[in-house]
Amino acid sequence: MPLYDADETLGPDSFNVEDHADKITISPLPRKNFPQHTQDPEQIFQILKNELLLDGNSKQNLATFCQTWESQQVEQLMNLAIDKNLIDKDEYPQTAEIERRCVRLLADLWNAPGGAVGCSTIGSSEAAMLGGMAAKWRWRDRQKAAGKPSDKPNMVCGSVQICWKKFARYWDIELREIEMTDDNLCISPDDVLKQVDENTIFVVPTLGVTYHGLYEDVLAISEALDDLQLRTGLDVPIHVDAASGGFLVPFTDPGHEPWDFRLKRVKSINASGHKFGLAPLGVGWVLWREQTDLPDDLVFHVSYLGGDMPTFQINFSRPAGQVIAQYYDFIRLGREGYARIHGGSHSVAEYFGNAISKYEDFQVVHDGNPQRGIPAVVWRIRQGCDPGFTLYDLADRLRMRGWQVPAYPLTGTLSKTGFQRILVKRDFTREMADLLLDDMKAGVDYLKTNPTDKPVVTQKAQSYNHL
Ligand SMILES: Cc1ncc(COP(=O)(O)O)c(C=O)c1O
Image (tube, rainbow, N blue to C red):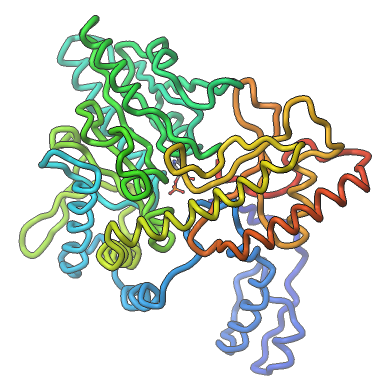
């Protein structure tokens, strides 16, 4: 949540309330002082509805990884669940049962050997915190049992999403982040081996790196760690951040090399239901390979049908609708439906990537190929080219037409280079891709014929990039 300043200088509220329509229409809504009187619900609804028109149009928000379209049935299920609290297992046992079924279906999807445990979360960020805490607890127990110090834990990863930086800071973990180079956008097993030691709680490869969408090679990292264990006895577990890839790879590239619980070293996996799991905003998942991978002292018990149910989550109260909608999506779509929908997104992404590659000034970094990464297209200005504008300028031009196509730098040797990305989701049709391509062409033509004195070089283009 952004931290809002309650003392913002807005001036006094002049909202004099009378039960009179015109009065409401011509007065500003309270912005600072908590209102004294009640208002006409329909009028307030209309005013807020109008105000919300100033938000970006989610269909043109190609920055977000999250779903911007839901079916009528999902909307109805969300309405039915509006008063259900997911934590009240005793009161809503059927919702608890549905959550349990989702975990089982995911254990099957991610090839757990049997005995996996897991839970829903509010998104991948909470899932990452839970996966990370379990790893920290396991490592601490191991160190203590061996009579070794447990005050300097570290984790090893590539250029991760901000949730891992939060996890590291909030839980006092040294973040050993391997930054990108021009030749290596993903972490290599050799780089990982240079960073791990006996204080490493886990290695976190990402299946669909937020910056460029490419899949990191979990198998190669796992094999390198197997080899390290053979040579030195050091046993370093893996948690896979499959925020996007966990709901893509099993459907779009079923022959993909193992990345999930088929690898013994993979102890936990997180994924966002509200991204390519296709559920509405507010649901993620985390699973552990076996019960023993989730230390007992992290688990709290709530009452459930006269007995008790183990829970692991940071929030207490949570909406239940997203979990119910997730189960609906699983059974309504099945593997076939997910493959069809995500396959469609990849086709549109590849079509778009192909069109971008025709620009001589641009170089495509990820072209939407389902074997390499998520349905996204990422490009940069070709090395050695100077089109006379930056990708931040282009992002600004596109913003004028409502498109949110963020420009942002990567990390390491690429931390000064601008990249641009679109996420292709199920409601970004080929038709919309053509409209965006037209607007890109118009934007590029405009910037070439009207060179900016001061190209936008930092993130002044004002689009959120989800990093
Ligand atoms: C790889 C990765 N991990 C974690 C997250 C955080 O996910 P959420 O927004 O579900 O908390 C994201 C979000 O984009 C992501 O791309």
